Image (cartoon, rainbow over all chains, first blue to last red; front, side):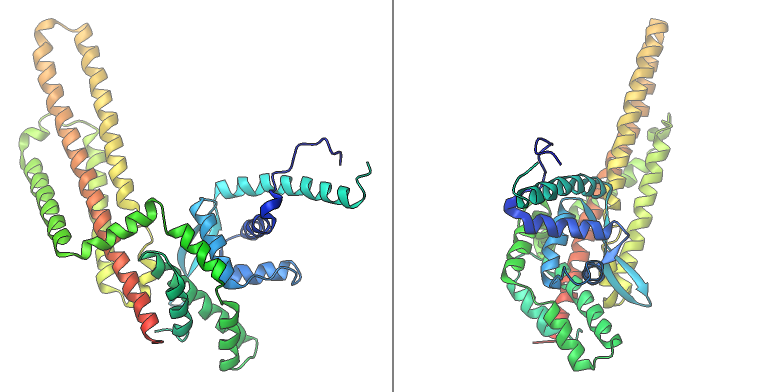
Length: 119
Length: 249
């Protein structure tokens, strides 16, 4: 990776927040999930590296929903039990793809710096 | 009634968001808490341990509560939520009844006047179909609101925006019809004899005024229906969340 490439879209000041948003969008790209299911799958996919307190998941989900990147609907899965299920919107999918590119560039630069900034 | 009422009450006390958003958040948490509890039970934990683990996983941090309050505490959605709950006051109920009654009387008057349909516009039928769809939807939603058990509250919001779609669509169809007839009227009179101008104009006015009247009436009625239904659903959500919270008080 050459340092003169386009700058990444990742804001280093809010790295953790951006990271959490992207992880949620990426998990939802495989299909609709309930809040609880989402936290479980994230943990499973990351081999236990990313653990969300479920309580902290709601602000991220609700923010993404208010931005139109995901949509939450109440649905029925088994018998009479109903839960809120989140799915990725078209805008969310586009956002995810754009963010993925930004994060790749970010990490390439990150490791470039770690490696002493040598070309 | 929820086995996690005390957790929900604690979260509800911390949330600084208007009703019914607060109730919606609590209902979502209640469903996820229950899922989490069942997950731990399925893993072989006993009931007490499963409850403890579920509660632990759902502990809301102060920062998370502040974020939720920021997201839901302002904006048009929040203002609309506050407005819906105002339907509960006597004056607003009276105002809604008067406005709805006036609208319905006007609609009956229009539909019973044969002059409205002497030169029906072809655009009148899609508008009528939208009005019928809005009417059927309203009946279905009212049945859902008043006949289903409290456990179904979470489903009530599904499709609630449809009356707004019907309102917008009827306005769009009526507007499109207006432009179509306007263009047709000028084209006919551009090529036609001057003596037929008045007759053409009268026919055009009858077609277009009936179309615009029915379109506007449909839009206003559908808009009012949406407002009333949203208020009723908000009320159901608030009652449901209150019953969850009271169970732990």
